[in-house]
Length: 360
Image (cartoon, rainbow, N blue to C red; front, side):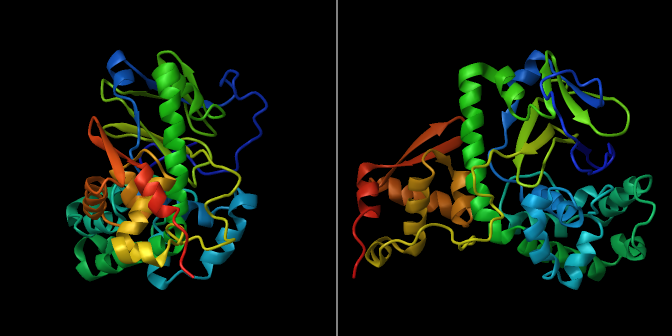
């Protein structure tokens, strides 16, 4: 269990759990208390959170846990880190807290989120570093100048972008596909068994639903209690999380390992950066390469939201929405609005175009 920032726990290898459904008395427990309003407002994140995931990846690359799954990835990326990337890495250690401004738990394009980090006021930078004091007595010497030195802060932000490009960017498309699968699974659980079933099944090895409390097992520290007070809970699937991570806030969030098939998003066999299968050059000539990619992405991820489509196709949300609108008006896709989301599916005509024989 990791409790970020002020509520700190450490990343350690997970112990063997012979009875994940049994009582949690053997370990420290983080208890999240729900009201009826909280149950009604509990939801799954609508898309990936790039900088939140980057913090977890930064911790994982410096850790020795999950060696079978992460060992090859660690060996690759450690040789690729720039000086600026290592500068950012030093503020996100395997054990310890990190400053909140570096890793906002927000959905959106990484460029936009990095821009928000770059615009962080100096006073907030200073406050976040002070909050780390009790948990990080050995901060790098240069952090003392960070809030007042724009050029130093810009160098750190450049390092954060380099770190993302190295640790996450080559695997982001495949990871987003895993998130779509996980979100579909969680929505099915919600539809068939309600919120209580969702909370029971999200991460049974580390989380247990004991109405009206969600109990999360921790490996150290004292028992803790968090009252949601009507704000609900956000469930966040993660590639690098191997337990449960509580992020207090409005709303509070709990990260958990994303549902994965037999192939890890970090598997280096094949071209991991390929956004979608290459299509007929004739179809790309008719629709354009990006629009063809969007159509293929919808076909491969039926029912995806515009946010998910943006991440899967590696384009900006506004561009994803524009291309999806053109495809819908042409009769190649259909769209269903559900609350604040638009869910996209391909039509038989769209499938026929995608499945047309290649030239040559």
